[in-house]
Image (cartoon, rainbow, N blue to C red; front, side, top):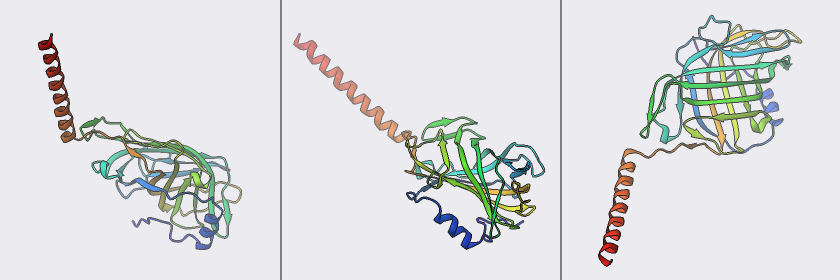
Length: 256
């Protein structure tokens, strides 16, 4: 099965027109990404008429929301230990809006929902133990869209605060500055069936393989934990402070 990192068949003219309609925003830094743990479909869009739901599925044949095992990575050097770790990925987004078809380009707008990546094993970072189920990254979103060319085998599920979406991120491992700009970008490939719509309705149902990335401006700060060597220096420093304090007390006693 062949997977695509982007929807190559999307109309360039349509993409340019879509981008020009979005407000300008500061350059974002990609701080995390994920890939499927296998080659099977991991998400499903389920049409319910004029709206629909996009959600993770536990198995390729599932038709109800569930969690999906993926490989998750932070891209900051201080979190190099969190690279391709197995995580439980859960996502559910809903829309009540019909899809829009313009020049062969399909857009499913106004998707609102939430997602999470939870660790499936304990992680030791800088001397701190993170238990199973720690929040690698989670978030909520509104006005996110699915976009792709009609009858294509790939599409993109994306949104950014600079483009009008409302997005928030939280994590046990990094901290985001108040008022940050956020972006989520999830590629959907190997769509089955191909991307299509019945006029007046949401996108027709499909299953897809997914990969994705998450960005912010400014870049999040790592929840700093002193390395063992730093702890050693701190302990030595505390010891020296204690010795000096005892000496001062001794001098006062002699003087008395």
